[in-house]
Amino acid sequence: MELFLKGDTANVAAGLEFITQKLKIKLTSDGYPIQVKQVQGPLRITSSSGKGEISFAKPIHFFRALGLWLENYRKNHEFDITETPQFTMSGVMLDASRNAVPTVHEVKKLLEHMALLGLDTLMLYTEDTYEVKDYPYFGYMRGKYTIKELKTCDEYAETLGIDIIPCIQTLGHLREALKWNYASSFKDTDDILLVDKTETYEFLESCLKAASEPFRTNRIHIGMDETFQLGLGKYLEEHGYEHHIDIMNRHLQKLVSITDKLGLQPMIWSDMYYPLFAENSPYKDETGNIRADIMNGIPPIEYVYWNYYRNEQEVYEQDIQKHKLLGGKPIFAGGAWTWNGLAPNYGKAISTTRAALSACKKTGVEQIFVTLWGDNGAETPFVAAYPILQLFAEHSYQQEVTLEKVSERFAFCSDGTFADFMNLRLLDETPSVMKDNMNSSMTSKVLLYQDILIGLYDENVRGLSLGEHYQRLAAVLAISKKNNPAWEALFGLYEQLATVLADKAEIGIKLKSAYENKDFEQLKALLTVLDSIKANVDLLRQKHRSLWFAAYKPFGWEVMDIRYGGVITRIDSVKYRIQEWMEGRISEIEELAENRLYHDGPWEMADGLVGGNVYHRIVTAGSFSL
Image (tube, rainbow, N blue to C red):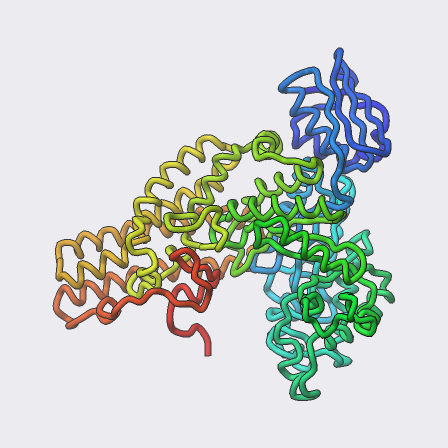
């Protein structure tokens, strides 16, 4: 379609060059005339009597409005639609620290998509995957971004009306950064920095300078979450026991002195301050407020309340009110559940997002973002989060949101069928798993990686007919792949995963039964099935590899090769063990002779399956390290 945009286009002209290509439109003087007005207030789109209008306040609103205008023009040439932004900031946090580091090209594609959705902020989560020139081992062989690469991303974001906020860690979650000898003098535990050490703050000042330098914004997320062992390592040896709140406050004061020096405005994850909120907290006074002496020890800073686990709106409302005890309104971080394992957990993401964002609107939270974590290897391609980004975007511009509306907008913005994407949840939301998979069962990851001979989870899946479930799902996903040509590679990956699991899900149970019954004919048949599984796993690896190298830097894929390779080579050993026994060279197969137990941890049980997204606990009861 050809459009003639006239009026207030100066502030969006640079970004239009990229968005028009994405939307497949041309700007010409002979095109359909649209008057563009940059004014305060809601965004508005109209079309009537052969001409249109777009009104917007911020550039990001214009890009959303342009897409919205085109979508509605295709349906009906006459319309008048107004949307009111619900938040002053609505964005995405992209994890670039769990082996998968998106390329600059892929970040640009994400920024274009965010512009179309109207999401105005991107946080790049980089624990050690950014360049700190004073510490060459920081991010060594991890695919870290150079300062030039980050500047390129920021400049591209600026044309689209998007801010990129660096998101780093300045206390914990630094295991990969601290494993080298350079860090030995300022390491408390394996992944936590040593508070009060001069070298620690020299290191952190270098990190803060390096992380903030490429970006226009002065905002920075400095992390500090989940430091449960704070003060319990080298710090304990040197200073004795001290409550983590006191250590946190002192560390935060020193960090803020650095950010003040650098002209930065920091925010932190709020969870380590949760003890301040408890009803019986010794940190509260008789009025129920946090004691003045404690508050005086916490420097002015923004707090990010993260919660993507509950589907009760009142839980979020209560937590937001508790955060106000720290002064001001918290920033809210929800989750797209791209870290469930190999497949996205859409059920939980939708359920928690609905509850959380309704609570944010009700309680006056002004800033939100959705996290795309990649725990334990980033096995789920982050683009699988696009349906949830659409949900966040619609909540960002409307008070009430239906999945029907999300589905309509997803079809336009992502060129995909929302219902087909929802089929991906069935890879983990299997028989016996509760509705919306609220307990985060990661069935597909467990069944792909668990050892065929040892079968740590065989008792958990016995009787669930998961082979039949995955066989049916493979056929469903084959249809979804045809329905979504723009997403053929993604659906092809998950179709192949279902194909693998159709045979592999219960192969261990079948082998043990045939072995115990000395059913040699069945064992011979299963040897053929093992060959099929091996071939299909390798094809799965290749499909996954293609997606990875199209989106990420190469560093980190070696982990996936090792995981897939482990499945493949173990099949060789399984066949070897079975043939040795069938041919009488060994008297028993000890792995199959041992009684199977219901998996009992170390993670919480989840609806008959296991909810721990940790590869090394799936594949063996042994140890991967000394």
